[in-house]
Image 1: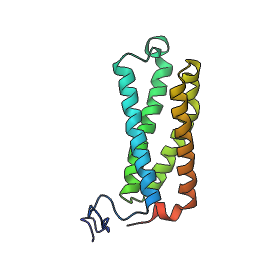
Image 2: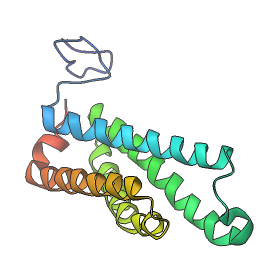
Image 3: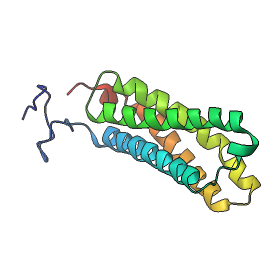
Length: 149
């Protein structure tokens, strides 16, 4: 079945926004979207509850840090959406976003380890493993990720 944009839709849902896409790329796209949304949510919670003391002690550094975090989160959501909807640009934005995410999840655990917050360190370890897995799968099955519907 073709959707309104002429792309083949997912036969199970008939939804034009989810063209027929193999399961690995779909899982990777959903991972990017979920992580991006959770990054926005985590920072919103930290900011709303006053749990960013660096706003007073290091306002310029934390402003740059937040710009990087929000850019990463935004690109994860956009790249994931681009993969799900089989856009030509989706693959490239997705890879850029995963690279940015990989950097931030390698660097960020040090802050929480210094504070003795090991749950966060463990969370980052899981995210590193999943992100590396999706990067490897993205390169291994490049044709499936870049496939036009």
